[in-house]
Amino acid sequence: MDKKRIFHDPIHKEIIIDSEKPEELMIMQLIDTLAFQRLRRIKQLGAASLVFHGAESSRFTHSIGVFCVARKIYRRLIEKNPKFSENKFILFGAALLHDLGHGPLSHTSEVVLSHDHENWSKNLVKNYSPINSILKNFDSELPNQIGNLFTSQNLFSNPLKTLISSEIDCDRLDYLLRDSYNTGTKYGLVDLERIISALTFSPDGNIAITPKGVIAIEHFLVLRNMMYRTIYNHRINEISTWILEKIIFIIKRYSTKKNIWIDESMRRWIFNTKNLEVKDFLANDDIVFYFHLMKWKSESFEPLESLCKMFIDRNLLKASDISSLNELKRLEILAFAQNKCRLNSYDSEIFCGIKQRSFKGFKANNSLRIWDGKYQNSLENKSKLIKALMSPNNSSLIIYPGEFRKDIEDKIEKIKR
Image (cartoon, rainbow, N blue to C red; front, side, top):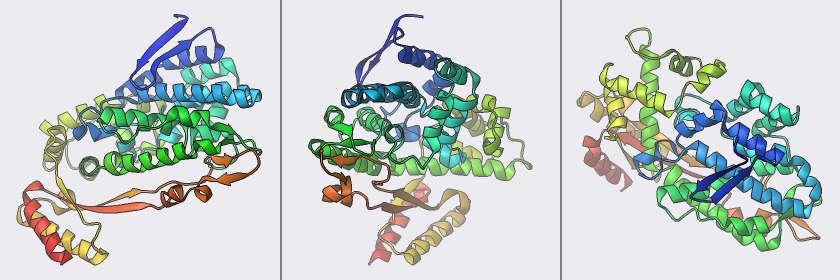
């Protein structure tokens, strides 16, 4: 093994890992495991490349980036409290492995296949021998210490929890920068260095931000809000997820009535997600998932073939925003769309419906507090902007076949009057 390994990263430039440092030797060994290499085959932004053509980067790339951010923050924090060095193995390992449990197309599989990536990250760290044994070589408690950071909800005033799983953590600090870069947008230009330079410790032992960093945090949270509204919850993403949900729905509905080709690992993902074995989990990724879509596109039955063709060929269903309508008027639009489907030989349960979109806004729990050397305060109490960003943002789409677009939109306008 080379003493040093260099990752040329578009966001953080040269990320150098030095195996002569024990904590970085651990990182190098973890990167070389099959479970971590699998992340090369999981798209960071799922189906977002259907609308942002540059959104092709992987969970592998992002995970290396999160480790880089964690290491920068660690170097800042040990200047403030040298005892924090006791946490470097936990912090670095958790930062690298936090997304180990993602399924095909990342968060899309959580909706489509009812997959919980955080529980799977914890499961792999604790029970997958190649990962587990590497961690135990450095400290026998590492698998439990790292795994518990991914799922535990009751670790307030815990600096590691704040850095790994909070509203302002290493994960978000990397993905806003990376996703903005890869989608060609300018929303996610986080002032990472400013945030890191303002980090400190508060009297309760947790990580805090000094007053000079509050504007950078405001900026970060505004950018996060914009990224969700314009990229993560983009209309095309919602339509793509709808189509994939219906594909899986049809397979489950007709599994005992039709001859549908599915390999054994994918079959377990679809029908027994909560009881997957590690070997079946690791056998699935974007390549395997897309291969099934390609097979079903040409060798199945209707409407499965049509749905797979829509997704693979990017000839998607359409969607119109009906957020401004009350519940009764939304149902009126849905009934209209369903009737159009029936009159034109579309299955109205499959090809149209209402899809809700939600962005929960900033949550203050276990996030950074402001510490000015005398007093500690919450971000939202010191910033009206941050308090405003705590409000959720919900919206609704009516999804339908493209040939009905004019009729649907005319109907929406008529109902609005």
